[in-house]
Structure formats: C-alpha cells, structure tokens
Length: 220
Ligand SMILES: N[C@@H](CCC(=O)N[C@@H](CS)C(=O)NCC(=O)O)C(=O)O
Image (cartoon, rainbow, N blue to C red; front, top):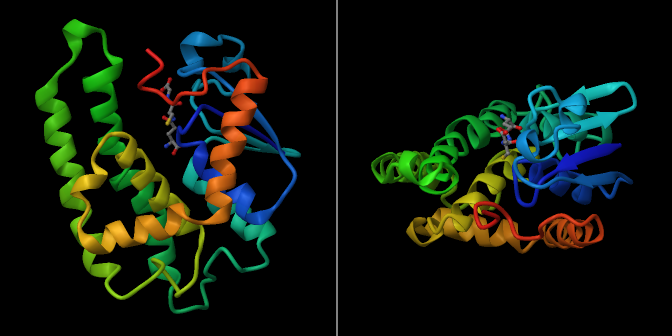
C-alpha cells in the first residue's frame, strides 16, 4: 500500500488507521499543497489533493472512505460496524460527519485566515466558520455523554474520522472551546498508541524525505 500524505492533513486519517491495523505501507510525504509545490503529483492524483491511497489496483482519494475501506478489508470487523449491528447507522453517520460537517468549515478558516495572500484574507469568514464548527460540536457533546466511542461501544473508523477533525481544531486553537464530553473524548483518542505512532511516523518520514515537518499553516 502507498499513502500520499502532507503533515497533519486529512491523510492523517488513513495513516492513523494503518497504524491501528499494524499493516505494512509506504508513506510518501509531500510539501503542502502538492498541487502547487509538486506538479508531478498531479499524475498520481489529478485533483492534487491528499490523501491518495493505492492498494494493488485500488485507488482512492477520500480520507473517510479510506478508513471505511481499510476497516472493511483488513480489520476482521474490529474497526467497523456491520449492517447487522445496532450501531451501524451511528457508524456511517459519524464517519461522514467527521469530514463533511466537522472538517469542511475548518478548511475555510485555514484558507481565509492563513493560506490566502494577505489582501484576500478575511477574518470575518474565518471567525464565522470557527463559530459554525463549534456549534456543530454541540450534537457530539450529547451523543458522547457517558461514552468512550461514537458507535457500537468500541473504537472504529468513525472515531478516526471525527478524531482527525478534533486534531485539526486543536491545531487551529479551537480545542480550548471544546465542551467537557468532547474534550474528554479527544484526550482519550489522542492518547491511543496508534495515534501517537502516526504522529512520530509522519515526522520521521518528513525528515527522511526532505519535506517540511511542521504542519501547514505554519509552513508559509
Ligand atoms: N474530502 C477530501 C478532501 C481532500 C483535501 O482537500 N485535502 C487537502 C488537505 S487536508 C488538500 O490536499 N488540499 C490541497 C489542495 O486543495 O490543493 C478528503 O477527505 O480526503
């Protein structure tokens, strides 16, 4: 398997998943954004985005779908919830929620607070989407009450999908505003050995491959 990754970008989701599974893989690091910094990468993924994953003839470009795929193919049911289990609807709902509802607004913060050239930055947009993101966490707060994991009382790919969104929020300084249940859940997720290994692997690989080892937006 080959995973194309930028430091702490959404490609961290499948990287964390691969570490949870203990599977062998090759991690190809890219400076962010590869679309502009590494034109050759467009031959791997026409969109220029990370992640990109190849597994034999399989090629994927969506981080939450990769987690679902890896759980379905390689976890022997441990990191997924099957359609016959009662937590199935929560599993797929939160797998998508992590990307579509929790990560998307944060990309607007990244773009309008950090990545755009000075004259196109817009603090109003960034602040509005920070509020938007935090208000979307409200539904998690209730859902997580008295629970360690989001679905089926066990750690699954859905926790990785949400966990990455919380990781990004902490990079953006939003974790101080997490409410108690989300804060507890996040501390629990980030203390997982596989999560910690994924952090080390990306840093080590960045150094070995001559790529900036500080996650964007600090790269610019
Ligand atoms: N929905 C996709 C989004 C992929 C995406 O936009 N990745 C960002 C990094 S987090 C990227 O590569 N941005 C650089 C660009 O748009 O050129 C996923 O979850 O994988």
